[in-house]
Image (cartoon, rainbow, N blue to C red):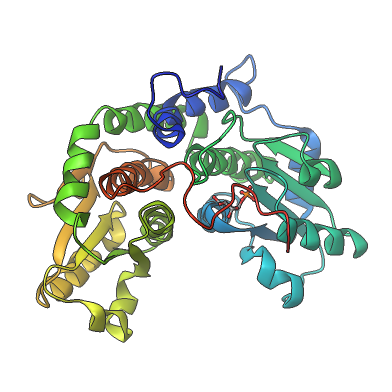
Length: 360
Ligand code: G6P
């Protein structure tokens, strides 16, 4: 069954490899008999009625929420703010007149999110939970639920739930756009099928990812991930994965911010993983990499066909620019996995962490 490891040494590796299947599952669940998007009409109405969306999440789900904001704003033209649940609890921003709260949670049990949901309900605001566990607390207590259909996620470090959340938000964004009369060429169901194939290419290249982990991370104390725009959000997630399971101090940075402080930390041999999948900023991030290399950094570029350079270590197949995070995160997940493995860490149950945090 889904909650057994089978021949896999760890749940995390199994769950990383399941991602192409999860994508195909999501496509099936969100497609009607005419190959159009199938989505609960009440959810659609709630999204199109909102003048602003507040995405509330924690951890990895917060990182998918950052991408979700971009998707909903760019595709559906609705303003979105993404907030860390625990901060929002006591430091709420000024709300718009007709807000919609979207809670993103793999488990649907995170206490900080529930705290915000209780407040939102007391204020009379509508709420939607995007979760992997439809019977969970957040799902039961919010007005609407969208299921991420990733199957049980057992490893503490979240992988397939993250990509599933972003896939569902892409579908939600297009559905809302069309309902709001926005013409949009981007067909998320078709594009997610391309994403699934691209993911598979990486999950079949595990030796190369292990090699990168060995070459860059076997002795280093720290590691930086740099990117711009969408890539920046994925860098935050790549850094979180690495620190969670390998205990290497890792940070994700927006390329342009490096020179405002972080570049002081670069020493001879410091690994810097750069992400360059967004054509518009690809040259800028390459410029940032030159700056750190000039200070001794050991550079590793992950790029995409169409904006790749000869020296790039990992080049992902071309996918739609909106969906690059779903694919570019896979090498980061695998590199973190192998880095943790090489260091003898307990990959599925890292120290000090819990799968779901049910206390505020
Ligand atoms: C814990 C887990 C993380 C997860 C976060 C949010 O900290 O260790 O992997 O991202 O909770 O969990 P949720 O279930 O709300 O997505």
